[in-house]
Amino acid sequence: MRLTIDHEASEPPFEQVRRQVTNAVADGTLAPGTRLPTVRALADELDLAVNTVAKAYRALEADQVIETRGRSGSFVSARGDAVAQQAQHAALAFADRMHHLGVERDEALRLVSSALDAPR
Image 1 (cartoon, rainbow, N blue to C red):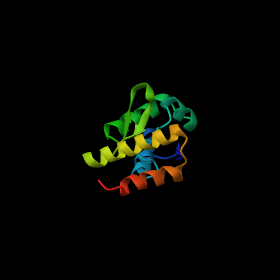
Image 2 (image 1 turned 180 degrees about the vertical axis):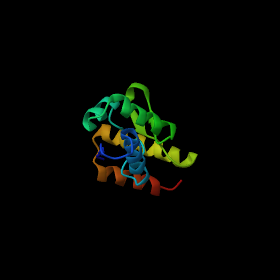
Image 3 (image 1 turned 90 degrees about the horizontal axis):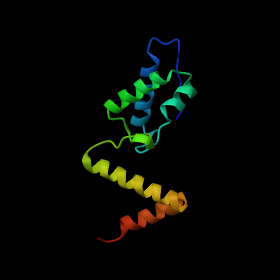
Image 4 (image 1 turned 90 degrees about the vertical axis):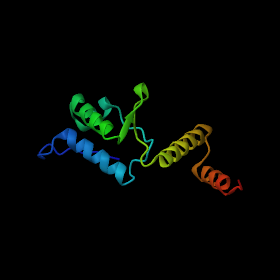
């Protein structure tokens, strides 16, 4: 996802960041669990003050669009009801583990498909 700031717009820059991230989450461009750039990195990228991006991140966190995990950074929050959130967390854990193991996407999808099809 690429954010842009229109310095001529009447909408303040922090609100432009907040709106673009919210829209990207809503349309699926940013999936739950996606790590966002640090406040400082995004401020540098967009040529904004660090406090401007921090204000946008605080607003996004207040709206539960993102969650901050201390030194680990800020991530797109799991959305929906409790079951959907748990499913998203499980999917993220699986994806993280497959990435760590070096398993390719197609193989990971085959594995999870097989596991879902197995009788219970």
